[in-house]
Length: 405
Image 1 (spheres, one colour):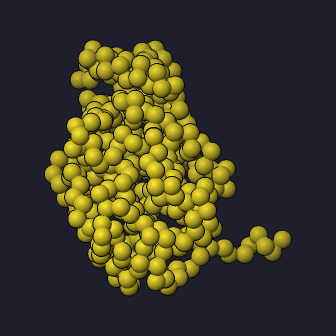
Image 2: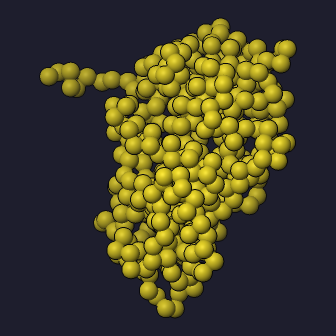
Image 3: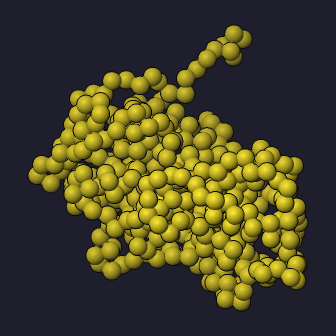
């Protein structure tokens, strides 16, 4: 009985850095932690170090708006994210940690005939990949979101239909990070927080050493899982990435009674929102057009997102905003990720995710772990190789989200 009240750590106390590791993962977010977890689970590789500049989950993994979905525009993207959603469905049980995954459904609103055409096209692409996604009309939209204003004749953006994706939903991002970190730790990986990578040494086409603020370590393989900071890490080994970094902002209201149990996205209004399990309305919009590493919010964002949310939910007029924040997004030219090998034999990347990265965490970990263990690129991530920009084989997910989520 007394065991119930015993304090337990989520993961072991941080050890001293060893002289060498088989695998060094730079970035302690969802991608890096998932890779460390699957390296042990599926390939028995345990001599792994996860290096995080600040604390576990301090970057994009802890700043996103928690939406999961797989209704993407290209067959390559839809297959990839569908595999991720399916892994998420069983991840709570696998990690023995409640991730609070609610598959409440995902609605992408259409406000014009052209938007309806685009939604119908996406629905067909999804269905050909076996993904549950279909076009619906105002009567069904009102059944799914009765509190949303659908029939207002005076609105600037009339709701004439939506792309409905039932498997989509929301999950607790902090729980995902904690669960994966605990799973990686229990599997033997070492989690090193407050460990900044300062540089890397190359010899004969390989990374031989990673230099950190806590000492230098030799490495067998190195993975860059640093999202918005990925270009800086890649520059350390002389592998430039065609990526620009922008900020994405979000905000939440005070807790309210249950009003919305589906994710709402409006492409033309550039807004998306959901209601959390605590009752807060979580809202986001488009990325900011300027490039920056400064994660500071703007008044323009709060004004625009509030105005558009009130067009859909005027009953939130007196709801108070509790807080807002920003995170970094690393955008590739075709809005698809850069995943897998580079010209440096033992240096691999997970970058260019833009606003989609959190949705892909488990499948990224699973496929990168396979790449590290077998030195073969899994078919699922082959279309996202860095070489596609030189071979003109782009995988364009431009406008697949319509807004940044």
